[in-house]
Image (cartoon, rainbow, N blue to C red; front, side, top):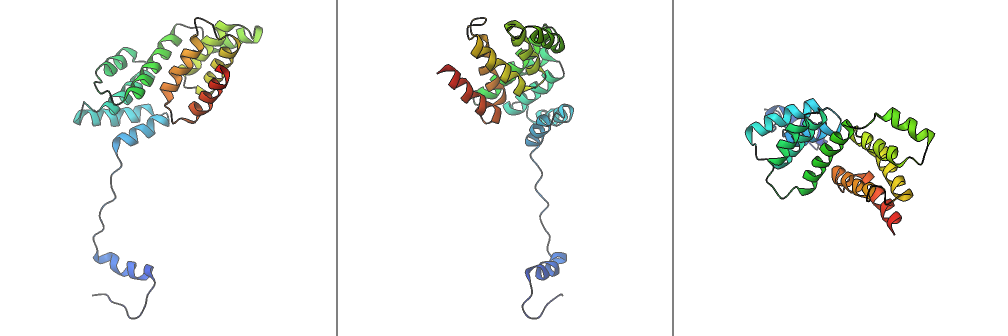
Length: 198
């Protein structure tokens, strides 16, 4: 057996013990957390693969179902994404569910609108073109350009808060649902919206 005489530094004692002690294997990362991180990084297909495996074991996991629907929506499978969201029965994840539904709504709306370049050109010619400003924000939301979209919606709200029966305000609230209360952009723009309202 190994041994030592006299006081030794901790590193020397650990080095001596290591060959004789079975260390537990490192804990496996939670696949759902991994999928969430991949989704945030924009690695949609990798996130989706993890979620499919996870849902194969438990197809009632509301958080996994909602994230899976968002992956489908990002790939343009809007009908399938909506069907997955309709299958979510839990009341515990209302904000996440509202966010995923908002994402599908923005992607559907964007499909019927002029492209972003045309809308930017219209705004360059007429910065007061409220319709172009709103449609550009929807295009930006569909492409996850949240900062630019929120800025555009807020400016439109300040300039013309009655546009299309208060649509900029309603859309801002939908984006807050989509991103979640903890998102830094939500904190900033909720404060700006409050200041604009009051």
